Length: 224
Image (cartoon, rainbow, N blue to C red):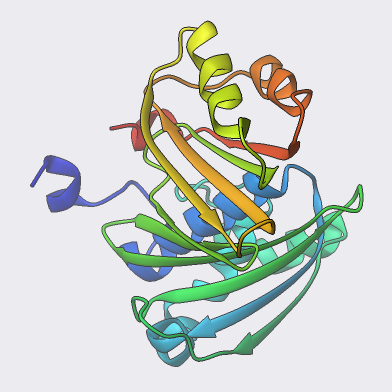
């Protein structure tokens, strides 16, 4: 246990799990989309659904999609800010299996035509866990700089990406590979010890077999 676990995050309240964690889920989804979101469908599960309204979870999720931080004083006013920025959003309910009660499934559309589905949970203390990306199961926290790479299910893609990161002096902390079936869609999740620059991400996008690359870099206070 560290000091962060005891004190919790700096945030606009009332709840680290339902508010601060929800903001971070939204920020993660925005980063992985890699575009300005213009349409969002958010399906709430469990405690997010039953008690989220009283804890400001709805406003917190939208604040994150707009790029606000958990301690931004505008978090409670995110609906009005979303209207100003042209973000159309709807909320609904869902039942998910084998996930934390504080969970949400977000489907996004971006201003350049991008689409993304992210499932994530907020287990407490402002921390989050992403359990699904574009229909494929995964598990990462966003506490380290993270790359999410969509690639063809062909030999050599993993070695190309890890080799490119090594050439840039980036150390891989964890690597997960998830696919929908042989020859189908693949998502590679790579957590690094150092932030990944946009120039490096752009280089990865140029590699054969790489379909999409998105980066998430945590704020300084979120780094472990």
